[in-house]
Image 1 (cartoon, rainbow, N blue to C red):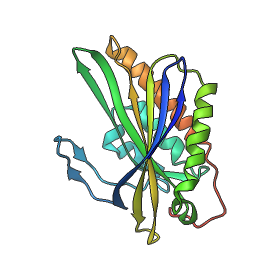
Image 2: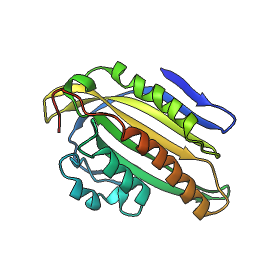
Image 3: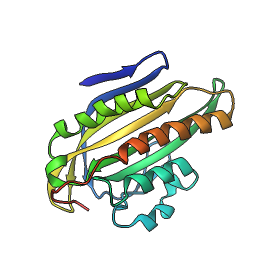
Image 4: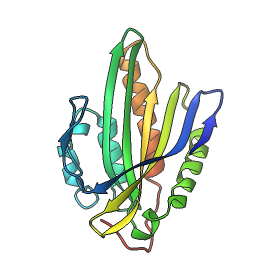
Amino acid sequence: MRYAGLSDERKIQSYLSINERGKGIPYGGCKREDGNINHGFSPLKRNQYSIDNIPEANDDMALKSALHKMNDEKTGIFTIGCVSSPVSDTNGHRISGYIEFAFNYVELVADAQNYFPLFFHFNKWLKNHGMIDDVKFDWELEGAHFFEKNCDGLTCSVIVNIRYCECEEKAQELWKSAICILSDYLETIPIQPCTKIY
């Protein structure tokens, strides 16, 4: 199931879909089919100093900044994973990546309906934070078991794809703007009087 979001003259698109795979959190590291390494889950909500040790964010200051914002004690979410991948080919240069997060509450992760308002209001947020280039935000919900509290629920990955650019510098600039707008929004998710996961 997919819900289409904003798609206006600025060519920013946002979609919401559901992935049926499922996972357990925390999860260990492994080598992916494409040869890259998944370094596994690191609980950053109570350990912000560990963000400097996240290999996926070592060379991406925008991603590292997003991890700090989203795992701040004043937010009602925590991050699960992230990555950014530069692409250079005959079409030019672009960056693709994602940030995965979940509500930090047993009661809120349990129901997919709690994620829909985040997606809906993000589309409004985009209208108020003008990006002038092509960017696609795919929000993807996935079932998960949270071992820390022995509960079932869902996570949300926001996959970000920027258009091809003529040079690497422009691609980096556009990626940074997209991740900043996303993390500035997710940073506003408030804490709740519910059962914390981390």
